[in-house]
Amino acid sequence: MTANVDETFRRQSVVMDFLTGAIGGDEARFNTAFTALNWVGAFREAFEKLVSVGTVHPSIRPVFRESWRRMKAESRARFESGVKVPVPD
Image (tube, rainbow, N blue to C red):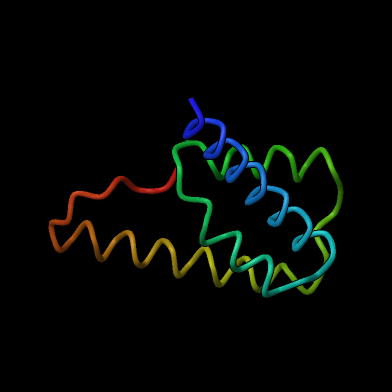
């Protein structure tokens, strides 16, 4: 049970860092959280909360675009190499 509570807390912390970085323009915090959104449904959860909270800081938009492109390229490379890793949602 403790493991589930710890994992829930970790996920909530990652989403909070994602939101804080996106809204406040903290690129380092945003990038760290973006990378840590690695559970099934993570991006959906983070984006739904972001939409309900507010507007993304203008400096984060190009950072997000680059992070998303990098993640997609890495996923494609793993898929093409035959590695059995689920793609992000």
